[in-house]
Length: 392
Image 1 (spheres, rainbow, N blue to C red):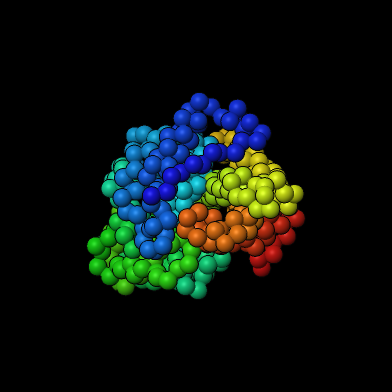
Image 2: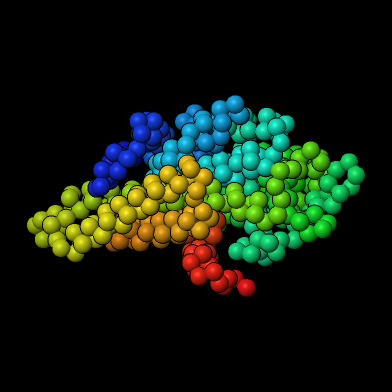
């Protein structure tokens, strides 16, 4: 099994901006990743299989709903702690971080923010402990960047709702115990419903043959006349703004997570460049390789400052959706570019499973698309700064 030699870059002493609790949380998560993820992740990625055994460890380090209050099973941490955890977990693998993002921001968050007390007490402790795994149903086969066009719908049948439709590209779907599903009522208003495994007509076929996020389980959510109890409707928010509010939280975590993947690629390339000898000297001594490494650490440092500031704003409930979009777009794009440069520095070894770079690169090709594509986030910034809506 691989030995994880990762050393985190901190060129601007950003650790000095973190609290003792932040550093404790980050280090505990990093230690867990080194022990439980890094030694096995390449094998699972090659097999295209989700390592189910990591769920218990993720729960133990508090990665499920870390900012959810302790009374509901969460750790009650702040947003910077959440971000640092996502950074360390994605440093291990984007697919494992996806599992955490879905569980925390797309399942636990809407139940906490939009649900009632009965729903919070019923679902959140089991989600926090990993007893339940959740999924989030928004994207449909014909509606990705335009989720408001969804056709999944539910009808009021007196003592229950009847849910029909399907969702696609859903992380955790094949083994989820609950799904927070967004659907239109008979008036066309979007609402969230909690659908549970075992409800008749609810199936979750798995998506196969992925070249990306291979250690993450992806599938569909299919609803064929599913009877959903009325108490499973999330009562405190409706409309498209409800699922988009969840996506803000998830995108925030992705901005930190992609930074972790970039750090891992940079650290791998730096170490390799000092060890790999060509023309009688380590390749780290050649100008072109130094240019690559210097540009990598510059972009990583800028991204670290971006998410730290965003975390401060989020702790104060002042982070806007547009600010979160900018960070998600910038940091994923940055991580992809670093992965590609790092792959080149390793030459042929860069495509093998002996090193993590190619796996990160393939994973990031999904991350740059999901939860708002690279181009859509650009237009969100454009709308915010000009006031002109390019989506219509």
